[in-house]
Structure formats: C-alpha cells, structure tokens
Length: 115
Image (cartoon, rainbow, N blue to C red; front, side):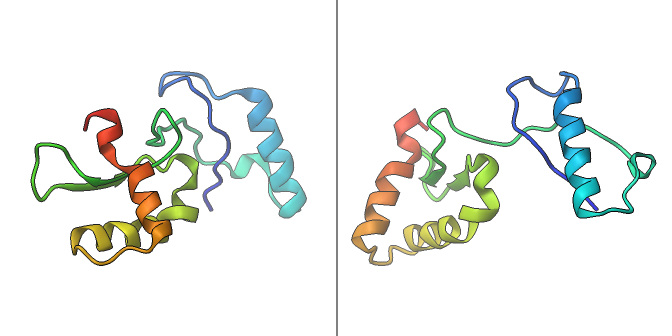
C-alpha cells in the first residue's frame, strides 16, 4: 500500500516533517486498525509538477510544432487528468471546443509562461 501526504515547498533533500508524518500515521491507524509503524517500508519526499499559478499547462509548446504538453497538475492530477487529457486530445486533433473548453484552453495555454 502506498500512502501519500502533504505538499511542502522544500525540495527532495528536506527532512520528512515529523508532525505531518505522525498525522498520516494516526489517520492510517484509524482507517486500518491493524496497521503498525513497523509495517512502514520506506518514507520519502518527492516532487509534484505544478505551475506557479496552480493551473496546468496544456497545449503546444511555443517554437516546437507538433510538441504538446499536459503537465503542472500538482496534487490534482488524478482529479483533473481525464478532463485535461480530453482537452489536449481535442487541441491536437483540432476538434471543435465548447465555450468552457475554449476558456480552459486559454487559461491553461503554456504560452502564459513563455513556453
């Protein structure tokens, strides 16, 4: 089983925050009464790709015809992934976009960061 937790701006070399770790362990014990700390095999920090404005980057890369990205989801990748993938597929295939999709395309265009 993999348990994920919190987002901290500290990089890969930062320590695991003990108070956050303890909160996760308490939640695990509540959900899984047989869970023991000795069951933990490893702990680590990792990066989640996210943009400075917390909006994903979806679309073609400036200056790179035929190169498209869908990144920067941060902690919302599982929630937004299907919709963002659908939007990217429509962008790539030049499908007609609904007004809502057109707005999302504008908000998520990588050009807003010069990429």
